[in-house]
Length: 153
Image (cartoon, rainbow, N blue to C red; front, side, top):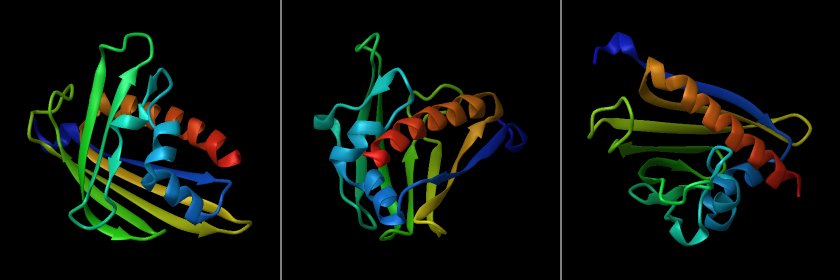
């Protein structure tokens, strides 16, 4: 795969919640299990393990709601952590469509305070093959719809 066919996904989204609450939704196992995964997928709470520190991990398994035999495990390692501000980590791709096994996929989440008690999240993830990027963007989008609902409680 050439570099020209690989891209970084960048999503900016404003949440109607304070930065600390949005950050916690990514780092608290109970909350992550309630919202993570695109519509049609869920994350069983017992599959979630998070150790938020440099060298720590975020592990969970997404399960397809219609066919629970379809699963998508995640096993990331944190490389940068600034509480309520920044989470950076990576995962080695394994069985990911369009990515050779062993490809390092990075995820950077920046949490910015916005007026009115809102939070602007800047997400950077990749590299992804161009053909896969739209699906990843759609997956995050529907996950964030579920996160909006959780934050509104």
